[in-house]
Amino acid sequence: MRGRVCGGLGAILSGSVLSFAHGGSLGIVWAVGSIDFMANAKGISVGATADRVYVCVVGRGTFQNSQPLCQYTTEMVNRGFTRFTVDIGQCTAMDSTFLGVLAGIGLRLGQKQAAGGEVSLVNVDSRQRELLTTLGLDRLFVIHPRNGQSADSVIPGEVQLQPLAESDVKPGDKDAAARVMLDAHRNLIQADDRNLPKFENLTDQLTRRVGEPPEPER
Amino acid sequence: MKPFHISNESRGPIELVRLGGGLDMHSFPQLESHLKSLFEQGHHRLVLDCRELEYIGSAGLGALIGFAKDARERRGDLKLLNVPPHIYRIIELLGFTKVLQVHHEEAKALASFQPN
Image 1 (cartoon, rainbow over the protein chains, first blue to last red):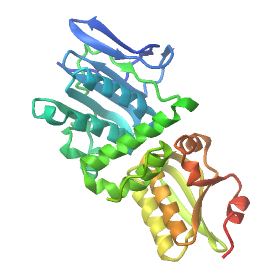
Image 2: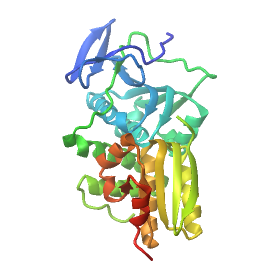
Image 3: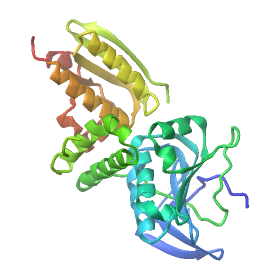
Image 4: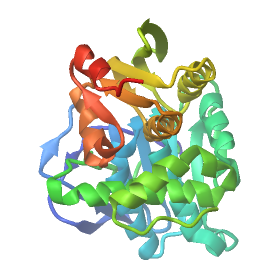
């Protein structure tokens, strides 16, 4: 079945995780923030079928939108989902926090990957591939290169994608934002220890920021 | 977003480094090699003018913290100038203002360095 281009008009609804039946498949909507119709489709949208979670990134995958993505994917792993498809065909830039959150899914799935669990990145262009390889994440993800110049989404038409809100960080959430960034970079280091020198200054500083004792010398 | 660009000029014993465009995972090696080269030339007092910086990713922030630490170990420092509000918000949010001093005026940034 040919999918659709991700990033259509959608709504962000107040509340927590909602479940609904749609077109014979189970759809799960992660709802963050206040009701707001998006004229601009940039951002991260998510949806799921009964056995697979879909994430579609339009524009940048960054620290700002990594926090809701982390919450959503953690919830879905906790619910037992083991298959994730992330469409980055329309993603113009990925920062290390965003990639660390994706790495966290792969690391959490762990042995479940041998039993059919996977994190698939689709519509990956050569520049994105190079970045994934540099960080050693090509071993953690199943990578599907982009076909030619245009990106054809593999997200099934029946999946209702809903946009995740970018973090609107309130003073009380500051620790949470730092925690997501810290965990994301620890994931990158765990995925490939060659990432340690790249990110140790950042993780050391964030470790202090969240009030943990300093990490032992490695 | 404009491509990342970097240039520097001397202000007496201090190097004023102008950053512009997007500083992401692809472009931060450019920053790294430029600052390393300044260190190798003995410049350990740096002011990074971020007026034209449009975007900074987490890897870029980590690199700045690392260079500030390296500069201090060499009896210098690295300070930020003219940080756009959307970038300052991230730096402040993450508590990085404790390690990255931010200034709004070039004269004050230059004057904030301890004399030799």
